[in-house]
Length: 247
Ligand code: BTN
Image (cartoon, rainbow, N blue to C red; front, side, top):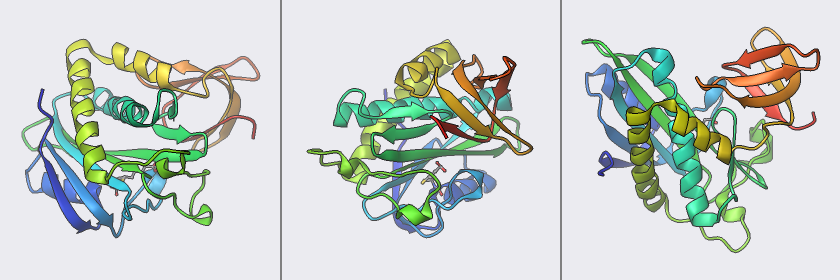
């Protein structure tokens, strides 16, 4: 199994922006784009994502011949590969996933994933799977919405350099991507559920038009989060900010 090549830059505005530029110029990869520093890194919901300084900022640009809803499942492929990479280094169960694809340690959020996509002129899509991992340091508390941490905060653990972490992640990503291509979403969803925290507990979903609270029941077959409201009504959450635990 060989993972796509990794192209490393000293500085980029954003590895996702570079992936988009390439895709819009007709280059769809597969390729990993890695930057040691980002000057305009971006997170989900239009937020800023600071990278660099020993943290990982990388994007996999890849073509996909799938309907958009199915292609979006790649964010769970990425999450499972990412969690597996961290736990292989730091210890089993040290990192856990929170829906849809945030990675947490006991200290807080250590990694996030931002998937962007667009059409290819001949049909199909390009996907840019951007992954940011706080290997060396967490962003300052006043710059993040959720408590953040870094892998370097784990007692007795020294995180690898970004390029070494990415080489391992790229191999695991390729292996999970192949599983997804050959066997579909079920094995990915099962692995995600095994690595997740927050399921079965209280959860608040901040949707564009309303905020809902209830119990996070499960990951559905298409990647939606099944939320049971206190009224008993079941809602499928497919996007939005979700917070686990008592608020
Ligand atoms: C999140 O908000 O949780 C997602 C953060 C994703 C950040 C990564 S860093 C590499 C890639 N390039 C970007 O500009 N963003 C993603």
